[in-house]
Image (cartoon, rainbow, N blue to C red; front, side):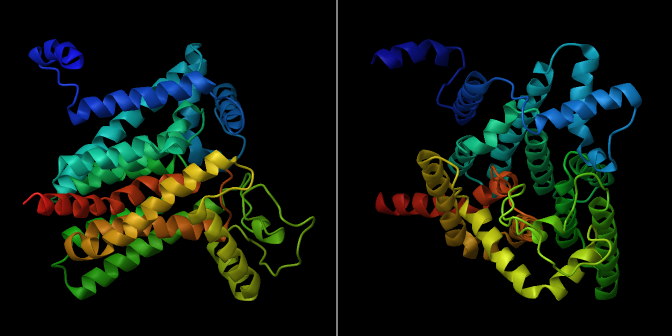
Length: 387
């Protein structure tokens, strides 16, 4: 009764605290405020190198190595903070605003796809309770913007019903921004083009379809090859020489004499390695896959690992239960989400997994989305039980 009396004046002003949007905004605020209070603006670890590159760019107009251009969005944001002499609070504010935009766009997109506000609320709550994902909003690294941009771009893509030049140009611009936020942004190019292809070119002749797919495939491999050869810290053979499962953590005291080509930082170099070292490649692929989908880390505390296992393994089970729905009802969206997951997984197999599960976190919104039909089954059972 007391709570109802306190809420009544708010409702009289048109404010309903139990509206899904209000609940999501409150939870978003609580989660991000918690991380800000707990750690503040995190400027250690990888943040240091982006700050250094931002200072170098302001002083010289260049970056230390070409590969840092693939992180330029974050570097430019930090450079702006330095130039304005206002500290890095602006960078965190920008990251939070994009995260908030992506969160509510995700909510609206679930409604657009599954036609149920209750399921949209459940899916967005899962995104907000994905604490490792949300934590990066206070880091001066590329992850926060990358996660937000990829989610915004994907949601925008799902809302394209009829082809228009404006929509296609907007989508291309979003993909370009993603590719210059993190190098792995290039992995979103094939799924995006596949989605557009399946939606808009179904009536095209087989010959034209084949030619278009071939052109897109060649273009993607050219871009990927250029990104791999951009230099700097990139060494795609190193994780195989000392058998790294987690990036930066060798499992051998020295290097193995594996067979490689002159330029390991290329698609040809990777293919050469796989063909000439099949036993090691298969073994490392299995270990990295366990680390990627298992998420467990020996250096995490018990509570942390329990959270990862319960939260994400439950999502995996939900996705498996929803496969039939996606294949029958929404195959194009399913192809998009699945291709992003598979490409990111393949990248981990060919390199290494991240210390903090960052590669998996980049696909976690799509894992959540693909698991949401599970709630449809629950709601249907409850509805049947009351009739």
